[in-house]
Amino acid sequence: MTIARKQFNKPSFILDKKLKQRLDDIATPLGTILVLLLIWQLLTMILPTDLPGPIKVVQETWVLILYPFFDFGGTNKGLFWQVLSSLQRVAIGYSFAAVVGIGLGILVGLNKRLSKGLDPIFNILRTVPPLAWVPIALAALKQNQPAALFVIFITAIWPILINTAVGVRQIPQDFNNVAQVLQLPRTEYFFKILIPSALPYIFTGLRIAIGLSWLAIIAAEIVMSGIVGIGFFIWNAYQNSQISEIIVSLVYIGLVGWLLDSLMAWVQTLILPQSQR
Image (cartoon, rainbow, N blue to C red; front, side, top):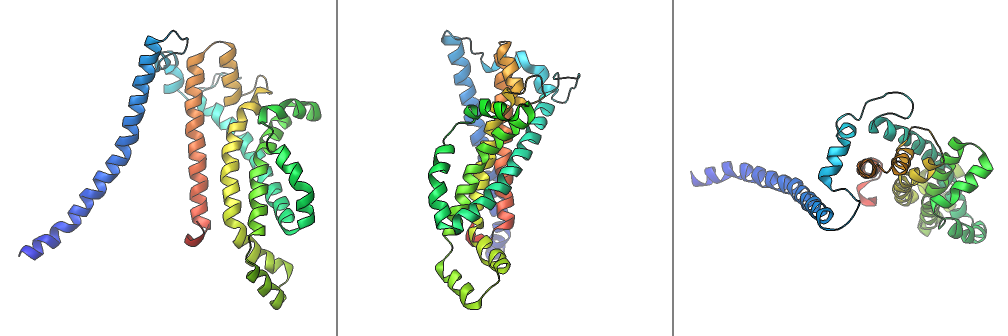
C-alpha cells in the first residue's frame, strides 16, 4: 500500500517541481525588471536630469503603448507599422547579405590565394560602423531607399562571409580525401560534404548578422526623411525633444531584436542535427 502510494505521488511531485521551475523562470526576470525600473525612477527623482522616469514615460506615451495599430496617414502611424516597415527593409538587406555572404564565403574558403588577397580588405571594411556608410551610400546611389538597404547589407554581410569561409576551411581532411577517392562530382561534394560541414558556422554568421541588421536600421532610416520606420521615428522624436517616445521605441527595438535572434535560433534547431548545435 505504501509503495503504491509513493508511485502514485511521484508524477504529481515531478509536475509540481516543473511548475515551480517554470514560475521561477518567469518571476526572476520580472522581479529584476521591476527593481531596475524602481532604481531608474528613484534616480530621476534625485538627480538633476531631463531624462524622464518610467512613470512619466508611460504618462506621456500611453497612446503609443495602448494603440500601436493606429494609422492617420503619412508618417503618423503607430509603432506596429513603424516596426513593420523597418522589418521589411531589414528583410531585403539581410537576404541580399545572406546570399552574397554565403556565396563569397564559400569561394574564399575554397581558394587560399583568393582568401589571402581579400582577407585584409574584409578586416578593414567590417570594422567600419554603419553610420559611416550613410554618406557614401547616398553619394553613390542618390536615393534614400537604396542607400538604406545598402547600409543594412554592408553591415550584415561580414559575419556571414567570414563565418562561412571559416566553416569551409574547417571541413575535415578525411572528408576531402574520401571525396577524391570516390571522385565525387562537384555538385555532390557541395551538397553532401561542404554544406553539411560548414552549416554550423554559417548559422553562427546568420545569427550575428540578423542582430547587426536590426541595429543598422537606425542609421539606415536616418537618411530617409519623411518615411515610416522606427529609425526615422526615433530621429523625429529626438528633433522634437520627445524623450519618452524615444525610450518606448528603444523598448520595441530591443524586444524585436530578441525575437529575431530567438527565431533564428529556432530555425537552427530545426535544420542542424543535435550533434552540430
